[in-house]
Length: 215
Ligand SMILES: O=C(O)c1ccccc1N[C@@H]1O[C@H](COP(=O)(O)O)[C@@H](O)[C@H]1O
Image (tube, rainbow, N blue to C red):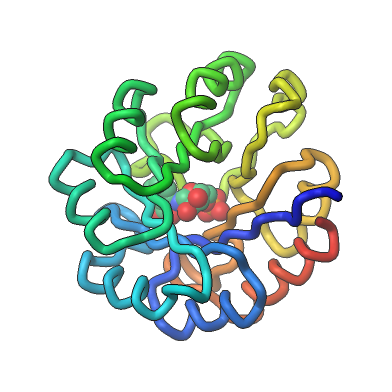
């Protein structure tokens, strides 16, 4: 039997929206710890959210090219996952994984066939691969921009490599994405917001409902 689709709602900042994701049936929530993000949450806020979520839904803290002290501070909060969403090399991902002692999801930006060719180098190092839209030149952050990418590029990926899909997904597009790309899971942030950093209960519920129906 096929594995059930993993649904991740990312950029949660409030207790209410965490409850919405849990009640809606998401598998995983993400908390951003990156100052330039409109979804940034402090270490203290993330600690409270992880406590609220523990044993109810998987938690993931998103970091961008973190130094060792940041990794240690976040790992001490006991998330299930750390998502690395910066230009971390395979060597650095390996070191962070050893340092953190939690599962690592490596986000990889996709904008060309060359980007897809980078994916296999991370497969045996990260616990999970997340593919995302490559940000435009000059973007102030490497993700969470609501941009999508040409999913047909992923046809070049070895079909035995499981991955999660992100990048501009919305309640309206997630079913098509699942049917077209056949990812292991889906991840959304901007597409379930009414304004940057402001999650919308009805959009979160609709995203989960539509993803489940398609997956
Ligand atoms: O959300 C952000 O601001 C962000 C900043 C830096 C790195 C990653 C970020 N977001 C992650 O990007 C993907 C896709 O997001 P979207 O659905 O296109 O908005 C997702 O994992 C976000 O959590």
